[in-house]
Image (cartoon, rainbow, N blue to C red; front, side, top):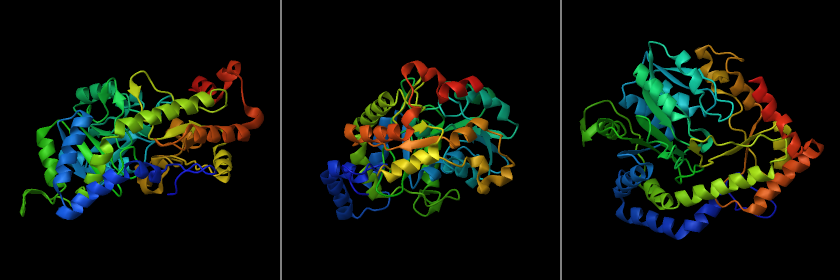
Length: 393
């Protein structure tokens, strides 16, 4: 992707990030090439130890993707055919796929209208005698409300797997996302706050037995070479990717803080516009993997911004329950009204650590130009989209 210039604002600028750490990354990759320890080399174990410490957990296991991380976490807790896994309708499909891959049935619930994460008040109604696990999603980098979820899980003897694939470094009541549930899944896809230079993923847990099971599952079910205790998989994190991630991990908090500052700047500049900006609940500290707004004329605004050289993206325009792949679940339009309503309104604006104030101001200026006479004063804010919908909800 080309670096940002005065005429364009990309959605994410991986070239700018690479330029800031180029020498360190090149040296780290060169060391792997010289050692030729490409599969489960020393950098993999080193990264796992460093990421566990960063995530405030005892253990971390590197795998090949966030999707694999969700699947293997469920397998490690013996979730499988005949079981049900509860998750949220507004998420990337990988959350549901991880459950499907183990043979479990996906059971969906709607989102909280203010946080966009799973509505904790709707979880218990979805529990049946077959429910085995809950997968809360820390969406856009904002943690789900974990304490009520863990209490529900305790009462019903359920496993909680955090989908932290967008939440590397975020906090819930002072605790790192990924350190609260029984285990957590992370994605290191290149565009993530902590991204590799290819596919990659990881898990965290405080359970030693689960940790050992995950080590085996990701590597053909081996406990030692050519001794296969279980039917496993080839789901290993490449050593080259681990080397890159070790370099980036040192800068993650710095980059996350920059994203938080950018989010604040965006929100301040759009305070008087009929745009619903993200809100952090008291319990959360988001790392703004995505900066997602809601507007009534989403499609027209996205097209207008793209015409001006500003890349805006929709996450996620078609909820899981309306995806053809999951038609067998039997859900229909109207089953999750908040998710469906928001799916027609959400728009992700450019967000990355290297984003400049000038670029943010250009994005907001173009949004203001598009909205034109639809701008509102401070006194009118109570009549905006968010207030009207809050009253309706």
